[in-house]
Every structure is written in C-alpha cells, then in structure tokens.
Length: 356
Ligand code: ATP
Image (cartoon, rainbow, N blue to C red; front, side, top):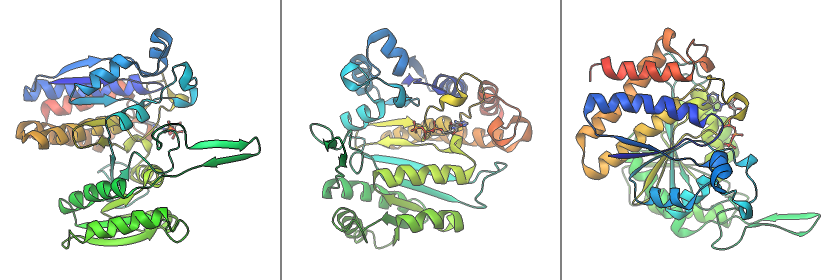
C-alpha cells in the first residue's frame, strides 16, 4: 500500500519523520506492505520547481489512496501567479474533500485544561468564509476602492447537507448527539440556511439528539462544560477556530488531528500550522500528525472492510497514548523530556512491544 508523504514547511519535515518512524514500526508488526514515498511541496518545492504545489504532486495524490499532508507556511508563499499555491486549498477543492473531521479528547497523562472531553468537530471544508476557494472563478475578497474591503461568504444547501450527513452518521457511531453551531441570529440568510439543512437532515436520524448553539456561546461553553459535546457540526471558519480551541483544551495544538474527507478520497493533515517559531529545534509534538495518519488508515480500512488495517490503526493510537501516558516518554510541550524524533522512536517502540 502506497503512502504519499508530503512533509511541507516549518515543523512539517520533523513531525512527518516521527510519524513515518511510527508507521514503519506498524508496517513491520502488521505486515501491511507500506511503500512510503516522499515528495516536496511548499517552500522547498517552490525553490526547486517554481510551485508550492507542483502539478506532478497533485497528479500523484489523485492516484494514491493514502496521502499524509504536512503543515504549510502559506504566509511566506509568493502570490499564486508566481507559484504560491496553498496546498490545503488545492487538495480540498480539487478532490472535493468537503468534510474536515477534527476529534479532540482528553488523554491519560496529558495535562489539558479540560477535565473530561471526547468530541469531534465536523467542519464544512469547501465554502464558508474562505474567499480564496469558495468561488468557481476568482476570489471572493476584493476592494472596490482602496478604503473599502469586502468578502463574500458562500453557504449552499448541497454543502450544508453533505457535511450534516457526515456529522449525523458519525454521531450514530458515538454518543448520538449533534450540536449545530451557527450565528443565525445575525447571519439569518446564510447561517439560517445551514441550520435549516442541518435540522432537516436530523429528521432522518430520530435516534440522534440535535441541539443548536450560537458560535460565541459555544466558545464559552467549550471551556465551561466540554464533556457535554459529542459531534459539533459547523461551517468552515467557525470549525477551524473552534477546533483549535478544542485541541488546546485537550493539551495543546500538537494534539489536534484531522482528516479531510470526500466521497472517494481522504487526506491526513494535522489541524495546526507549520509553527515556524519552533521549526528545526526538535521540540514540536508530532502527536497530531500521527493521529491524523491513524484516522486515515481507519477511513481506508472502513471503505475496504479491511479489519487488519483497522486493528493496526487502533494499535498505533494505543501506542501514542501509551507513550504520552508515561512521564519518561512525554513530549516537551507538555513538560516531558522527549524531542520530536525521540518521541517518534518511543511510539515506534510501543507499537513493537504493546499487546494488541
Ligand atoms: P496556520 O495559520 O498555518 O494554521 P497558526 O498561525 O494557526 O498557523 P500554528 O503554526 O498552528 O499557528 O501554531 C501556533 C503556535 O502553536 C506555534 O507557533 C507553536 O508555538 C505552537 N504549536 C503549533 N503546533 C505545534 C506542535 N505540533 N507542537 C508544539 N507546538 C506547536
């Protein structure tokens, strides 16, 4: 099975190396036949090939089932006309990866602000406020005069319904509750449509409880009582912001995994960015990318009914939890002694030695 590894910028190469160390151990233990192929994207690819997301890489993603996308430093990219293509945007729009699934939970031994939390943010991933990608042609952010800046937010019935379905299906496999987060008291038309479609989808899931919470209240309630949420269904930018809050509540940005999933394709990607401030110092926490990889393996396993791959993914997640649970093998961001590479080795060792 081919795994396409795109290390990206900033801490990307370090956290992908640690993730690959864990995946290599998983391959040896479960005989999965992984073929890990690395390709440059981001600033390195721009320096070598003139594009931060080369066409050849996009073509390779199209024909590869498992892609692991590292974080990218899009702030530092040149304009699109000079090859500065945002990789997240390129993959999400080209492969119609409309669902960004971002779980957050408290983990044994990890000091987080939340006492107890186990939730998943189901974030719409292709429209909303994202002006660089929500139009068929052109950019939805523009300046009619030098003193006036405007942005257009897109919410569609189609986009709302399909992410709502993802959320309700997910809730059925969990604690059967969906919290729809919106601002329909102000954005009556756009968020009103999102809420209407979420509620309409909910009618097909009478076994799943549905509640509505306004985005600003949600920001507060996540801190007050995070344990009461199960699946959080929301639009693109609210989901981006809330999922960082959830990751932080669970221990830090280094603990927020995600997959970008469509009907035929999914890509693993940590919820955090490229953290240029700590790049190259061997102090980044690779947990988010490791857990993103396990989510991708589970997604592929479910599509093919591959129980061995599902068991391997669960084993890797246990190994990550095992390493995080021991003071001697915790990462530096939570006060432990291990750098990025050593933590990758600790997880690989746990994969080798832990019982299934
Ligand atoms: P982007 O806009 O690309 O998502 P951002 O501005 O949200 O990026 P991040 O790169 O996600 O910022 O990170 C913010 C800060 O959190 C970093 O500067 C870093 O200090 C910390 N951080 C992020 N990811 C990790 C990690 N994996 N391990 C340790 N610290 C991290």
